[in-house]
Image (tube, rainbow, N blue to C red):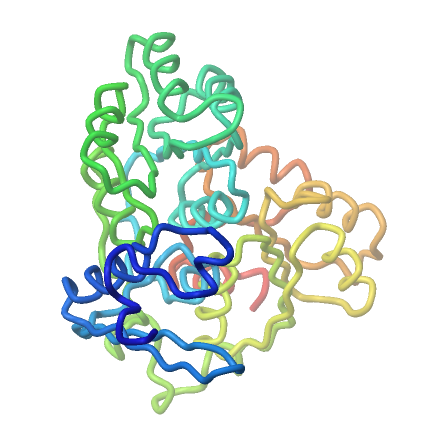
Length: 357
């Protein structure tokens, strides 16, 4: 039967007995494989079984970083926002928690104020309450999809509406037309790269990014290692970094390692208190917004319950530059303040405070 297997409307004995199929499946499959430049072959042993296989020619492609969490978050950040630009607020809308958290982490790492929503209804409520500058809107979501949510947001915020960027896995031109027709300003296909997000932010918020200078050159304020002792040797400090965002963690640890500091890590305020109870620290770099217990509450707890001789120097880390937020940090008992995104020069300066030398 093998020589007739790929003929149209021909069935094997087992196929005729089962009365299933039309005898076209293998014929169509063979033609599809042939159209792609390949070959479909068959091997069969009576009483054991049959194996079908095909070979197709492919050109070698290039790898790109996609929205896989391990890829994006482990990738070094090579661009940062150029300083002295208005701080933008961004809303990320996606029912897939993993995808949503990845994008939120990236944006927070660049210093944006970021809110998130898991469906279209929540996106509308957040938009009316928070007035974001830009929304990354997933199109396929339960309850209310991204198309309907976009139409509602555009109708309810007629003056200065947010820029809405659709996130979609679709490659069909008709869906693209529907997305733009609903009021979206642009769209990004999944899986996306960091560069796609950066290009989108640059185009729609008129923001500028610059290369992240890995470290200052020997002529800068940070002396080369072979010229003088490192800052950590001149000024040994026990440092605790409190930060829940993985991107921000990596950047801060990278800079602190360059300054030769050994650093412990806490991911929320409760972990800060537990680690501080185990051993004293000279400095705590304290993120303000963390889960379970935020940085302000953790600072108040340390100030209230630690002996005076064990009080650490607590430096607030936040994306906000508002005077009201700085006041809240001082009132909680923090000693200093550093804005995100972190830069090596700023971190070096804040660790060289006269109080600590």
